[in-house]
Picture 1 (cartoon, one colour):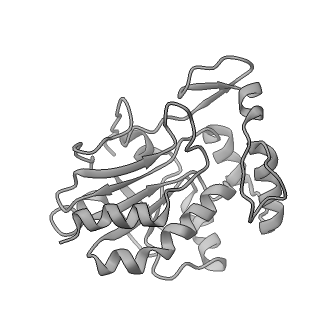
Picture 2: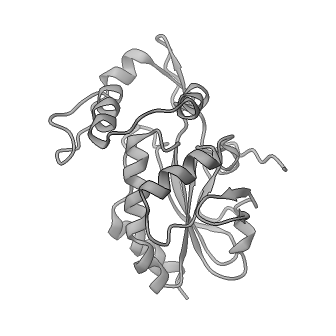
Length: 226
């Protein structure tokens, strides 16, 4: 497979590369070029299913599928999870009509310019490195999900227990190599050009562990709808 590498997150006006991945929710492959020339597509690039924040963001994106389809916009969810593990998860946690692909090597994330954040002892160089003290000082505020604002690690542990999510060896392998993988959503027009994006890579880090508001996504979709 051709390896693409972007120097930063793709921005509106950039042409998306043709990444080819294994399909989770059906047989065969899924490629960005499957949509090019046919219809716009919202591409969600997430960490693996081991990430409780991403599991919620994937579900939120799936809930918009019907509204997106009404505007002629398709959606594609990509997870850093091996194919069989991902298929098993969605078999027991089905999301109707979800179109998803597995990317355990994070090829698509690199292609779209999303870095794998390195956790260090005390060195901060955002968005490439972050010290553990800085990471532990962050607070995730999810009033409907968490009893109080928590650091990312405590929040992740709490949500995993809430979800009754049991980590497998495959999950642990993904964490070992990509715990700091940044995520984002990119809306491509029918020519495969980025028209809108939402990523964790804001200068102040305010988007970390967040997803875009549904009305923001739908407003962007309205601009590319035909």
